[in-house]
Image (cartoon, rainbow, N blue to C red; front, side, top):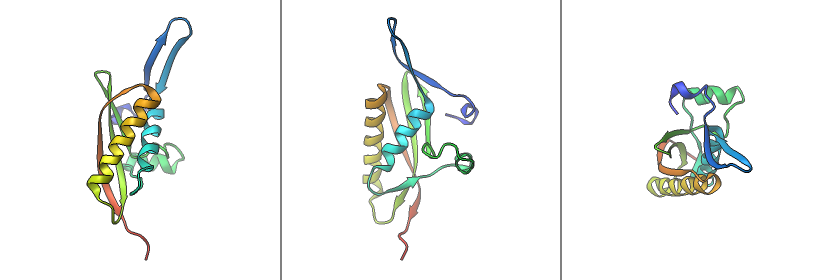
Length: 129
């Protein structure tokens, strides 16, 4: 989503069944799925948000989806995950695991096709000594 889309509640239609109705998934649901999957990877300290996400978090909104951006293109979802990594973990390996876990979680839970999961490391968190 770009900055202009933040006030819109985008819904993805995943299945249409004339007999029983339609199923829609909001973008917020997809971002929460991505954030939960990313934070399950060992070595990920937390999701990292931009200034807008940080402000929304302080106001009580968007805590779970902080650090995740979605872009829909050609029927596929591109995901960007901004994460803080724990000190001592290999960034390439943690990033690869985040990519796999986020892609699998979104595709399994929603039926949407994920074309890319881009991982941006925004901070390394040191253990308190």
